[in-house]
Picture 1 (spheres, rainbow, N blue to C red):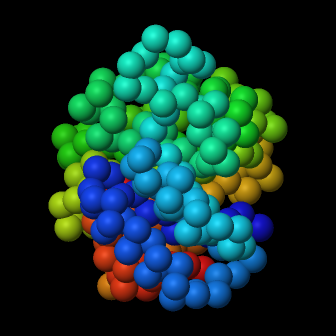
Picture 2 (cartoon, rainbow, N blue to C red):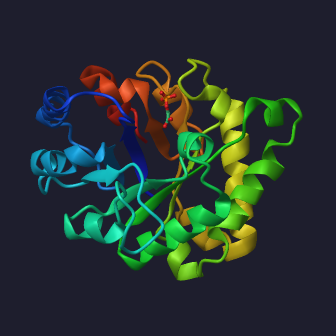
Picture 3 (cartoon, rainbow, N blue to C red):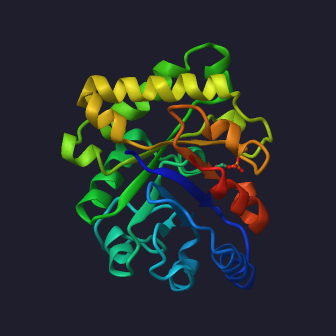
Length: 253
Ligand code: PGA
């Protein structure tokens, strides 16, 4: 049974004290999550160690990085390698968030390199895809997101693809308060799963968690997560408020 996942993406928010308070509040809520559920906190690099300390070895709670660099090591001032993450016990990493694609010019090919390095270092990538508004308005979203998957993931073997989490985040829904309708989310998630099935077969496609991202809130999480092909959410704004993120975790199937 594929995992149902509530992933918090703090982005570049919160100072250290605020971050410490937030994660302690959420972990302190002692939410009993089920065997098939997972909560992930994707935090800024300087907070990885603190977050990992707070989460400890509580079952089905994990800490993730929000990015990594596409080289193994070397003279890349300011960058963070997957080996560094692995050596700190960080086993999840967001790859290809639309903000990285847009502001840091990350291409599908660069993201494929990052994916390879993550997998080689036992780090599960949370691979983000999603179309801008202009593409959605032109009705070309399937094609656009299909290319993102193909160019960054489809060189992987069947064994490797099982270790990927996909997050569909329509750019027009990120931080805008404008959520995709359940029909739009389900339609795209079903499409993504069908593309994965064509490449890797039904059994594998059915095992891959596909998260929805884009203005997931405490008030709409249950409805979005109820779609058969939506396996939880990647949550920005609402993950910065303890009460809201707790409700989102509780909304998992
Ligand atoms: P949002 O962000 O929940 O604030 O829309 C989602 C994301 O960018 O991962």
